[in-house]
Image (cartoon, rainbow, N blue to C red; front, top):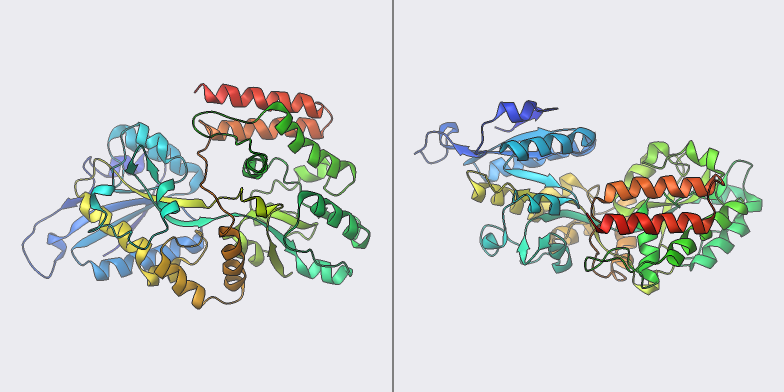
Length: 427
């Protein structure tokens, strides 16, 4: 029977002894509770995903009666501190949900190499190769992604239709996006802006811009981005601000754009904003207006990438890694699990799962799959994140905010960002 624990702090570490997965008793067939292997699965997610995951684990246990699953759920803001403590103490769960930060756990020798199980316990025969590569380092597979997403522009279709402004063409160049914003501005009510200020809330947007200019932020252990590249990014947004196509810094500060609940897009205060494609459903649910997709600017330059939203990894100290691997294989390959989890974690990298979901998609799902099919055709391999990228993200945001507030010039801001990147490279 599935058991779910909602833990915080170091409580989970105290609840379980090192060694993780374990068998108790053991001879009967079919499996009895005393004969089952028990594995722990550590993860985070929103309420909708929590309920869907519980149902998916029930399905796994029905198909694998010799394995019992203990789910250890935690809110994301507490998850990483708790996981760090568990890894250090040798008490981490058998299956660990990671993000793009999984290389840090590889460096701690905390994750199991999974390629030894491919072809038997871990079925990746119909998995997208580029998605597998994102979970690989130094010739070893450490994580299998639950889904991928891409950067996407979303616009408020209802607001445009009510205002009498024309809908955006798709795709557009950066300059065409600016010209379109200028064209719809006279149609909008006071206090409604053509564009969300996405200059600093997602460094991925700047990363995309840099890749278009053949100046990747981080690739091969180095950065090819120069001061002038950062200056071009900042100047583009400050010119939009000067033309009142994005809000002033005070107004933008009231909408931090951390999700649909804090976005000018869902508040009806802006027409076009940047999101990760897998979050479209959440944004649509947050407003009664109809939203729709367009591609990010200059999509034809093929600078976009598929971004895994979550990885499932196995603790290297798991007492029963085979059971943990079976859990992962089931979760990423079973179409019924895919239907339960939906697209909130991105588009499945398993071809059978993706095809099954796309064939039955309706409404928001149909929009998402249609958008993703085009976006995916313009992707190239994802670059790794800068070392300690969260520190860079926070500092980058502070610097661009100081430029927007008139405390730094565009060039001064670009110089500071460049210096921060060089400092991160030394870590």
